[in-house]
Amino acid sequence: MLEGTTAEIRERKALRINPAKTCQPIGAMYAALGIHKCMPHSHGSQGCCAYHRSQLTRHHKEPVAATTSSFTEGASVFGGMANLKTALNNIFTIYEPDIVAVHTTCLSEVIGDDIPMIIKKSAEDGIIPEGKTVIHTNTPSFAGSHITGFSGQCAAFVKYLAESTGETKNVVNIFPGWVEPADMREIKRLAELVGVEYILAPDTSDVLDSPHDGKYHMYPDGGTTVAQLKAMGDSFLSIALGPLASTAAATELEKKCKVPNKVLELPIGVKATDEFVNALRLAGDTAVPASLEKERGRLIDMISDMSQYMHNLKVAIFGDPDHLTSMVSFLVEMGAKPMIVVTGTPGKKWEGKLKEICSETNPEAEVLAFSDIHYMHQWIKNNPVDLIMGNTYGKYVARTEKLPFVRFGFPILDRVGHRAFPMLGYNGGMRIIEKITDALFDQRDREDPDHEVELVL
Image 1 (tube, one colour):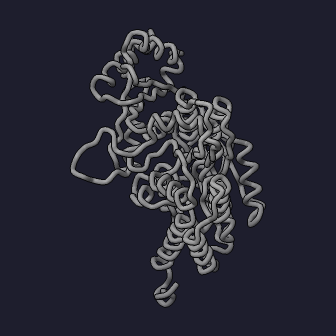
Image 2 (tube, rainbow, N blue to C red; image 1 turned 180 degrees about the vertical axis):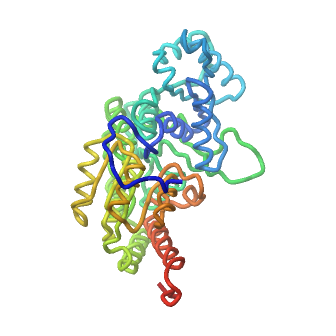
Image 3 (cartoon, rainbow, N blue to C red; image 1 turned 90 degrees about the vertical axis):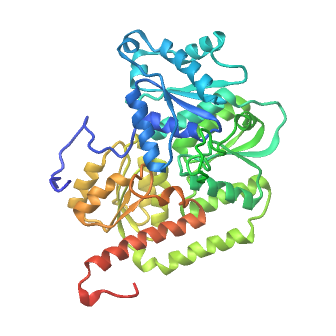
């Protein structure tokens, strides 16, 4: 499919081809799914909502429920207030959620719908039942990415719901960033091992990876409750994982309820996981349990065992900024050489951070924000690499260039393990090494001449 891509690189200012990102409403929808009995609502056309639901459904292999204002030509001209009020009436009558999280689309943003005013009017008109909640965030697709949409929705949870009673409790808020349900479960397991009482928000574990019991549940058992979101204002500390995805919510909580925060990178690899575990240890005034020290030791042992394959391994990698920061750091920890790092999300500050990380093994690494997979493909044609890492859309580049490919990030549409097995924490680090070495060894098994095919690699 991409065999026609040439090595000649021409300057492009306005055009992105196969961008390494998707749009803001998908991020807002994913965050809303991590709240118990929450209905994500797309204020715009049906087509937008259908696309966003389908991407999340195909990634998680789970049915994703979300509603839409179903804009028609009339709403596009005269505004969407009537549509949203009708939608809220139907949602609370038919689906009975505890909370509705409204996010906007390009169309409603261009019209300029005043969502807070519509929510207030709906409450005054009795459309929003007593004890139920409607919140909102602005997520035009012509700005930011799915990560900024996720960030905005998380900040909206705090802005609308967090409360301070004046009594500080021995609880730590954890904002997990955009990670898989299995990763959120791993974050909770680590906090429990260290002995810290916590509130995780949002939490998509047991929502988008709920067990099969033969019944359809509109609202699975998982998710952060509205009561927990309100109680976040009484916690003594927030730990925000993933600067781009989680800083806004932590900052909003500090501003609103004076809960201090500590922003960390996603705990992928040894160093980042050490920093998260240490933050938990300090917060809980506890000791790291021996079982967790053993997990760390097993990861170090696997890095040592596989070092001959990782040393100077040339990697092309693309994805979301927070994922890339920690994943590239882990590659460098293992001695690999990130050659080109690409994200579709804008961010000059992020570029500087990644160049500093890459400098340990490859000071010449090319790092690009607001770029695309097409450019990365052209760059690889001029600068051969040993491995590609990124979401499902990278498979076409890997196939064309006959390179091993490791999937991580969002979306992954053609595999299933990402939602079941964490990449965070020490155990997650071992899984990443397994995936990388399996991809390298599979290629050798396929392509080595007969006399060089080894039983033990």
